[in-house]
Length: 400
Image 1 (cartoon, one colour):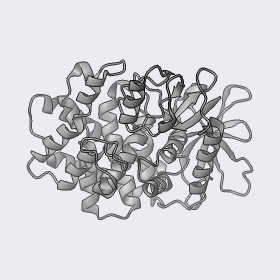
Image 2 (tube, rainbow, N blue to C red):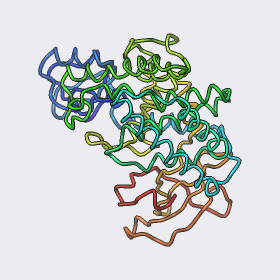
Image 3 (cartoon, helix red, strand yellow):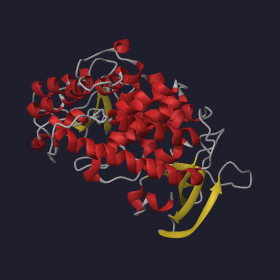
């Protein structure tokens, strides 16, 4: 049986089936295996992991724990509780009408971050004005329809993670900021900080930064320095907003003190740092990388709820409401056996989005594309669950 147990109950002789640490980027410990020494337990606890999954069929049991099925049920119940709340934001322009402008801004942002990476390597100064312009373009698009730029983040390449992650973080932080009704200038500064949050990784040796295998303990400590490097680089940039520096400096801080670079706790972390930590984890765990298979968005939202000891719980709930329990670009299974791509959120009920139905699981084949609105009384189909597009060889980008 697979169980989730408190880290304090982990003992030599137990078999870890899941380290439950995807919220820790570049985690340097194996995800599974038999615990053979107290030293390994100490290393896991040092990472900040407070709950872990064990397989009782391959190692010692623990009475103080929850079966995996019960954890899954609890996560689902928590998500359903949030999904019953009305969406926070309503677009002023249809998705299709905004996509052209969103794609243009997205391409500009990717190009700017790519140029930044090359520029920092050759010690060129950060062009703050260019980032201000792109941030403003993002915000203009998000104010018209926040789903357009958001769903473009679902289309990504494994080899461009650093660049795409920076742009996605800026987009999602801007959406988050809009849902909180922050001042436009503050939103711009947050977006700039998000685009620049990982710039410190340029100072990490390539042999560590691009290592396809798990990092050694020493390499992991080097990798963790990138947040400090980002803070220093931005702090030295003339005119860089203090808020942008804060977003970059605190995106790996966790409210229980397990984060870095400063191990801040609770309200020692800025609200914007708490926002960045949530969005950073969400985008990281939904991305396919060399050493990590991305989760579908809805599955990732459940993990955010499960990890609320590390992330700000109320902000996690707010983030889910602003992007929806089925974010645009998600693939969902319907009661009819058909699969649909979420192309627009419902203005009043997160559970009833607008879909583009593209596939039938019974026949394992594509079908004539049909646009359906689950909110209409004439539509009787309902969502069963979100699914992984790769399971059915579906390219989401073809249907957005």
